[in-house]
Length: 233
Image 1 (cartoon, one colour):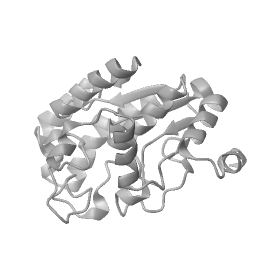
Image 2: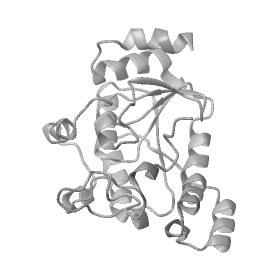
Image 3: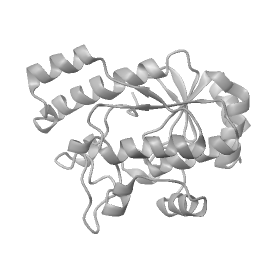
Image 4: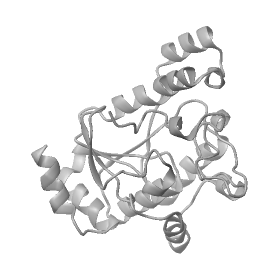
């Protein structure tokens, strides 16, 4: 854990761009950025582009994403001329799960929803992060009660990796300001009141006054609204 403390000290007082530059310079091919194509992740991707960073950029294709997300992947690759590596779930695991529990098992219970997330997201993430020392994410404290205590630098015991959250203290307005100022492409579903976009059957638009994560797994309590990628142990 000494390396964590040294890194925290090294990044102390740096803004998000400087944080990413330091990680790019220090870790190079030992760091990876996981993007879900959210507005936060598009901001980070833009910064990595400006840095001409060689950090690996990848996304998880669960097989249930909205078409708008697939369109944004292609638009982003074309605009920035970058490679976004795509990881899929193991088809045998998906096949067994669907045959046993049904194609929309996530509506049945929290346990079955988490099983679906595990197979479609967590297992591919583990493969994507293999042999990496640093995992860059677009998490923000403001996003939900399950994320209100995140820090810039953390150690994720689930994946045995250093996690960097460059936008951890950004507000939603700051994210949108950066998006518009830099003409960054974003998911068109945001224009239809979607504020947190995941798999199509697990995502809906929010109503006025609802929390920004209200459209994700809306049939569950707020305390359970994580897929397992970012749960602290």
